[in-house]
Length: 343
Ligand code: KG4
Ligand code: ZN
Image 1 (cartoon, rainbow, N blue to C red):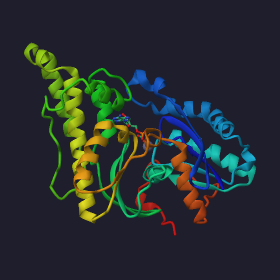
Image 2: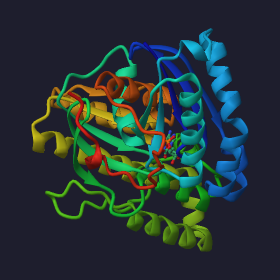
Image 3: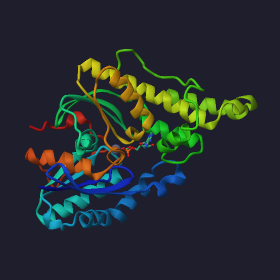
Image 4: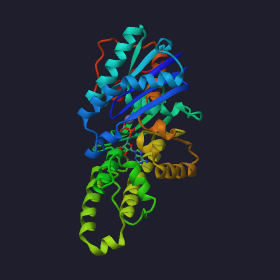
């Protein structure tokens, strides 16, 4: 069974072909980074126009790479939310048209379910149940994953997402958009304990996150640092990047470990764009290995937005007998609790 997965939820136009829920025949991503770079963040209006311009080429490329024709596809899985409305609409309406013309079903997929399940695109996969942290530019959430379609929210950010904090701090440091990779790269030349930025834990029991205080602390520090000759000769911009990254990583690691303990889950999974971060990978691996807990990260191309994870979610929903009506609309907000279980 071949599923075409499409994601246009934010600034990447992605299409992938997945066979029998495991074999990735192609995974094409058209990034809009260059387009949004001058603005220091995603401009929704530009993003949707760019998706419209590229969706057909990206799908054609994914078919070409897989060496198949549209007629060989058994179903289309498309992200309907959460995300930017204008961007989501392009993917959804394109998918509806193709599904209608070819007489095949289409599945309406939650982007977060795609991120959670992205770990199953790998050869080495966890067994249920596990704790999953989805950490990206738009989300920072912890779930207890008991099976396909069974996700209980354990905690989430009360303000900025972790990736958003990376992007905003990168902007303050003049590193451009998106900032996560740039901060990580710069931070390699800095010292993580040079500046002691705050780690917000709210209460000890809470599994929620907050990054806006950290962002403000970094902003105030940069102001002070720029205005003081002594400080700026002692602390480098790389030290600030490394120290900020360390503060984010510490909170994420602590929360994953607490969540795992709270629900007594045998394993942990980290997905989403920020899961590309090597400092996060190393620190969580270390903390988990000490407790004999296996930790799973998808490879970077499956951490960031991609069509393969959507195709995979679609595959499981397809097997579950699901298909969406042509009247289906996008959902800018789409809580994971609204998802139906997969039997
Ligand atoms: O999953 P994703 O591609 O899109 C969303 O659904 O948001 O994640 C993009 C986010 C951006 O905020 C980017 O700065 C962050 O992931 N990111 C990183 C790294 N690579 C990407 N953050 C920290 N370290 C990285 N190496
Ligand atoms: Zn995403």
